[in-house]
Length: 320
Ligand code: AMP
Ligand code: MG
Image (cartoon, rainbow, N blue to C red; front, side, top):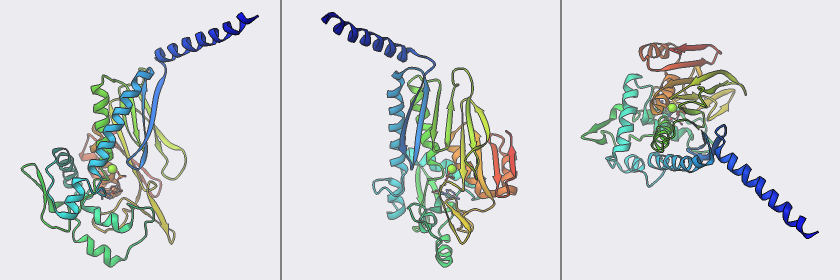
C-alpha cells in the first residue's frame, strides 16, 4: 500500500497552502510587531495581511534613527557635542524639534525646560540607581537650568552659558512616533496603531471603528477609562514610569525646573492632540504645572484634551 504514504503528505501540504493563502488575504487579521526602542517596548499594529510587516520594520528603523540622533548620552550625537563641547547645532531636524520644545517652554512659563539635563543626570535618572542628591549640589546646578539660555539664530542652536546642557527625553519619543506615522503614511498605510511605551498614535480606524486606548490607573494595574481615537495621539506622563522611594517619599523622573526636585501633586497627565511631539511635551509640562496652573493652561490651549489625576485621586479633565 505505498500509494497512501504519498497521498497523506500531499493532502497536508494542500491544507497548509490553503491556510497560508487564506491568512495572507485575511482582512480581519491585525499584524503586529514589537521592538525595544527608547528604553521601552514599542508595538505597531496594522490591520491586514502579512505584507505590511516590512513597512512596520521600516517605521521601527526610522524610530531607531531618531533615538540615535536625539540621545544626549550618545557621544556620536550632535546633542552630546552641544552639551559637552559647546558645539552649536545646525542639524535642521534637531533644531526644528528644539524650536517646538522652546515654544512649549515659553507657553508653560518654563515648566517644560529641556535644560534640565544636569539635574536629571545628578538624580541618576539616566541610570539604574537614582538617589536623592545633596541640596547644595541641586542649587548649584539650578543656576544653569533655564531654557532662555538657548536661542536659535539663522537655523543654528546656540547657548549663552557653556554650563547649559539639554535633554530631549520629554519630547523625543513623541517625535519618533510622528516620524513612524510619516513612514506608514508614505507606504500607503491608512490604519495603524503605534504604541511607544504608553504614548500612542491612532492612524485611521481599526476596521472602521475608532481605536480603543485605555488610560492606565497610575496607582493600580487596571485602567481608569478608555479613549476612542482616530488620527490623533495620546501621551501620558506619570510618576510611576521611573521612580524610587526614600523615607516613604516617591521621587520620579519629571523634575520641576524651578526647584530641582520631582514635581509634586500629580500622578499622571494624559494629553490627546494631533501632533505626537506636542502631546509629549505638554504632558510633561502639565505634570510640572500641577492642578491650578495646569487647569488655566488647559483652558487656554483648546487644541489639548487633557485628563490630569492628582495625588489625592482627583480627576481634572478639559476639552475631552
Ligand atoms: P515624559 O516621560 O515625557 O514626561 O518625560 C520625562 C523625561 O523628560 C525625563 O526622563 C527627563 O529626561 C525629561 N524631563 C524631566 N523633567 C523635565 C521638564 N521639566 N521639562 C522637560 N523635560 C523634562
Ligand atoms: Mg513628555
